[in-house]
Image (tube, rainbow, N blue to C red; front, side):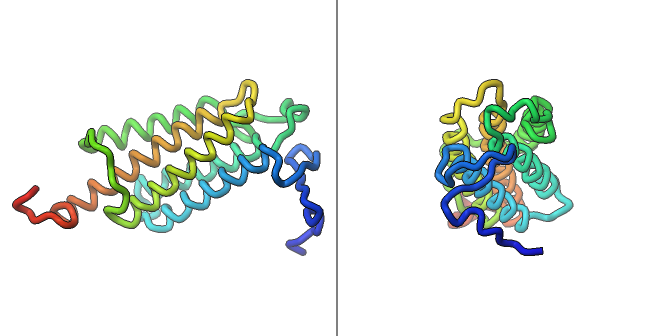
Amino acid sequence: MRLYTRNGDGGTTALWSGERVRKDHPHIVANGAVDEAQAFLGLARAEADPASAVGTTLLECERDLWVLMAELATAPAGRARLVAGESAVDQAMIDRLEARIDAFVAAMEVERAFTLPGENRLSACLDVARTVVRRAERLVVGLELTGSLAAAYLNRLSDLCWALARACEAEHRTVHRGRPGRSPKEE
C-alpha cells in the first residue's frame, strides 16, 4: 500500500462525501483542529493508566472524534448520508459525556478558584487538550451546521477535559500528600 496519493499536491483535499475542496476550506480547518484535539487526548491517554476510568474515558472520546470528523468532512449536499452515532454526532454521545463529567465531579471537591495547569503531567496534558478542543469548538461554531450537535459535543468534551484534569490533580495531591511548593503545615 502506498501512503501518498499526490492528489493533494495542488492544495485540495477530498471531503468524506467525495467533493474536493481547498485545504484552507473552513470545514478542513475545523477538522484539523479536531484532529489536533484527538492527538492531545491520545497524549493524555498515554500518560494515564489504560485500565483506569480516565484512560477508558479518553479512548472513548478519541473514537467519538472520528465520528465528529466524518460529519465535518461532509459537504452540505451529502449530509443525508450521515448516520447518527456512526458518521454524525448524536445526543447519546453528548449524554455519555455529561454522565462522565457528573461522575468525575461528584468524586472530588471542586475548587472555585481559577486553576493553574501543570500540577502533574497527565493533568497538564488534559489542560492542553481542553484548550485545543475549545479552539475546535470555535471553528465548528463558525461553520453554521444546521441540525448538527458537533459544537455541543465539543463544548461538553472541553468540560470533561477540565473535570478529568482536576480529578488527576486531586489524585496526585492524595498520593503526594499536599500541593507542590507547600509544606504540610500550609495545607
